[in-house]
Length: 175
Image (cartoon, rainbow, N blue to C red; front, side, top):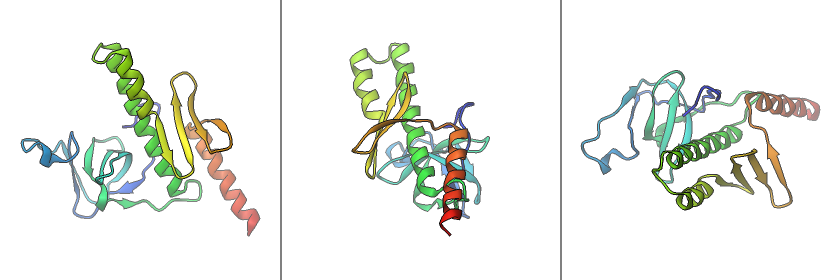
């Protein structure tokens, strides 16, 4: 989910027939579960977590958040400043960060012990994607290892906008 410090970035739209949102993925696992919200077709959403079975956790701008079957969501056409791969990576990293934040709350509130926190936070804060490993550090933020070097990465909205402008300028120079 996006927090007050996160910028909403639409990554997908809801298909024409709409989508139910659930508090947990796969409502068949809990037959008594009822949808927490219904999104109308065309609603812009941000996918913040993706499971291998196709279920995604998403949020709508200023609206509800929850789980839905993501196989029917339609990807938003990227504009010049943001490409689809970058948006997908940001969604994965935000999902990992959300999980790490919840684990920190669980540790603080005594729901998990330090050993469980360490192991679960390590797994949650490690995102493997293509030829890179992304790692979350509570003290210094995101780091990316590409097989050659480790670098700290600023994923603030301002730095993403700057990166988008640089990519667009690079395309203009190449043409």
